Image (cartoon, rainbow, N blue to C red; front, side):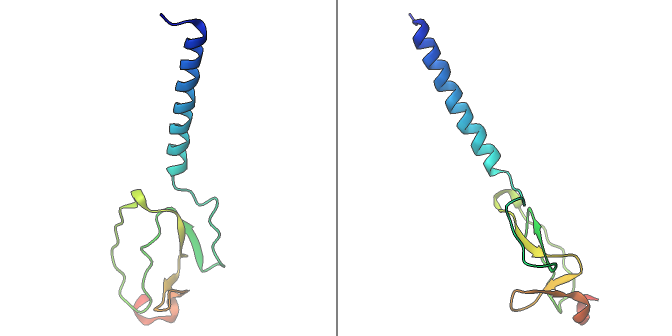
Length: 96
C-alpha cells in the first residue's frame, strides 16, 4: 500500500528522469547557435563536410548527418583548398 508521501516521491522521481531524457534529446539536436565561423568565407552548417574541393570538378555528396555536429563549411561561391582553407571558387578553373 502506497502512502501519500511515497506517491509524491515516486512522481517526483518520474519527473526528474523524464526531465533528463528530454534534456538529452534537446541537447542532441544540431544547432549553429553556438558555432562561430571566421569570416565571410565560412558558414555554419548543421551537417558540414561536403565542401567543394578547389580545382576539382563538382561532385555529389551525401552524408549521414545523424551523428555529425554543426560546424563551419565553405560559404556559397567558395571551395576548400589543399590547406583546408575556404577560397573563392572563381580563382580555380575547374570550379567556374
